[in-house]
Image 1 (cartoon, rainbow, N blue to C red):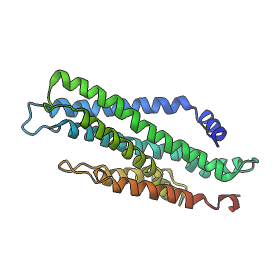
Image 2: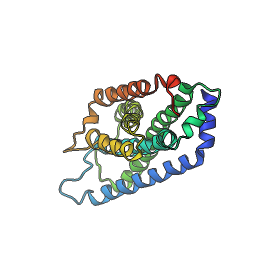
Image 3: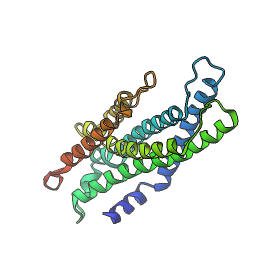
Length: 231
């Protein structure tokens, strides 16, 4: 399995994934900078009223971005290969079809999980440092707040990684890239939307349940792949 993952990353040009993540980080930072300085202390009702609120908004933005990013990876690694018949060619090799598919799914899952963790570490640290200079968020940043947020981020990262596989169930029906990406946007708009400080994803059971559903549907979609005729 690990050998297949290494081959897939080499074939897919791993550097392009890294650059994609860097661009995504930059977009998230730019948007959050806009929120921070436009909705700052001078406003009547600033968007960041406490550190937990600021860290939660950052996390929601990161998860939303990388769930959609994952749908692009799913389209590239799986949907397009079925659509272009290159998957049928891969299946002629003396390699387990299930291992081949699940190596691709593993890349998407781990990539999403890792990026949510890493992006939170980098962007949280950046905005904590910025706020220490500008002071728009005036409450104290305690070790307890950071500890609780760290646990929250890890659980949400797992939830995002599992949810990132859900669009595959929609895209595989007609081997459609648009359906895959649009479904991820719909999932994000429902789960990660922030209304008056409330988000469905803040109820941790919801993203974890959807993560389990995403993993289960992915398994069910390909459980019989060894016996399917793709010709």
